[in-house]
Length: 257
Image (cartoon, rainbow, N blue to C red; front, side):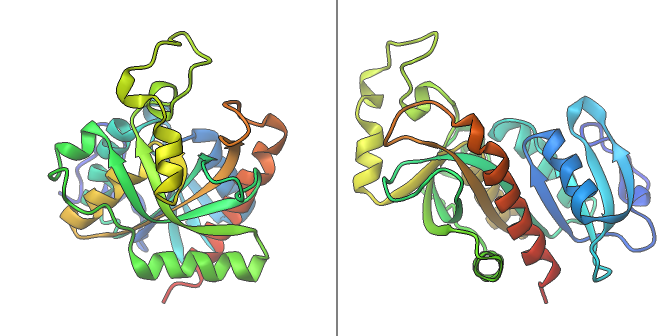
């Protein structure tokens, strides 16, 4: 297995070097994966840019080996990447994403650290039953909270709604399909009353995979839209939200036991 190069991620165990990482920072966007390496890592090597699933291995300033990888958009793509990352030896994964806040007190530019997910995702149903809990690892989650506090990043901790679609599943009607199914009308307000903090598209499946595959997973997302105010992403705030999420995740990874 060590010399096997995996079809989707484009690398295998042998490509990770003599000090292989056990932790990965996982981004949906390949540019975010590259930004992490350019900003925070030393002695970086590109492992693969196969299918846009860019992966890099490098070192944090404290000498910890770490992988910066790309999951692609959505749970099906993430499920493939995570399966292969676990096979090459990754045992801790921190997802760094973007999200839309559901609660009015969570502003654009802040971050949401997910303690668990309401999982409405087909990929997750192939991994575990609907009733199977989608919960973040408590130790990784606490590490993210501590890092956010140290960096003075505005952060919120709670339950995430993890859904399969960006438009219909998040009750957006300003799209090619303004005709939502009846089951989706009012779902954002329903989730708001259930104290769910945000919408995103990957964490639920990641958390279920962690439980079934026996690895640790956590998630932090920069808030780029306020669904209390409207449907649109606030483009002017994307950079600050993403930088806050990345800085918090890197700090947490560096300070893990």
